[in-house]
Length: 306
Image 1 (cartoon, rainbow, N blue to C red):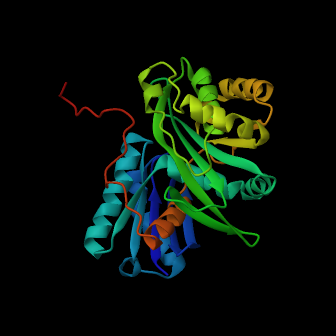
Image 2 (image 1 turned 30 degrees about the vertical axis):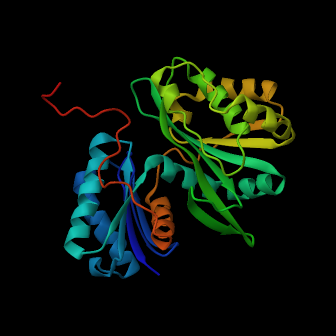
């Protein structure tokens, strides 16, 4: 089993954790200050000491690449890259949406298992408040089927569950957030199991062109109406857009009888332990890492340039 050191510095809580495979050996969550630059090295040292390990015994480093706190995220990436270079061990980076989705799945695994066993399609939607009146979104499906979009698997009550990525991250503006989220839910409900979809055009303010062909919609409509669809909404938008999301939940319950929305308010901040799980799965199956640089939801313009 690989010994993995993971760091998440993308929020107000700095977390560092050490694992062997998917078994967490030690973890620190520093929520007493925003002094990530000062605390990160001592927190890493403490996590190693708690597990009786040294930096030379780390086989793999992993880090949250964001989006998230601009300065905090860059601190974590820089430190992990430095440790990787000094030790010669590889490093993997992950998008915040992936981290949130794994956390949501694990914190709600009992309900997820019941929904899937009850023939529901279980979706997880991390919605991140990234300021500028915008929400960064992703869609994942928790299921019992492995495919080429799987990012994580977990054993629960003698069954193996997989987390599959349905879409890459996309931005929505809060001015028409409700309309677009309801439109997205309608489109996802019509998908075949194991399919993926892109919603990039919605972030550009375009019209709601059908992502699925009319023939596809007609073929799937009857089947979709007979299925139950469950969506767990998670991440920090629950704090800032709580009222809007409650109204969306009411509208969906009225207009989509076989669709339910659940709020996961236990997963407001990302955590390094979920990066350990992602890294263990990715390394085991040789999945390609993201480039080791911060994930920006908008084009980054350096200071002094236009």
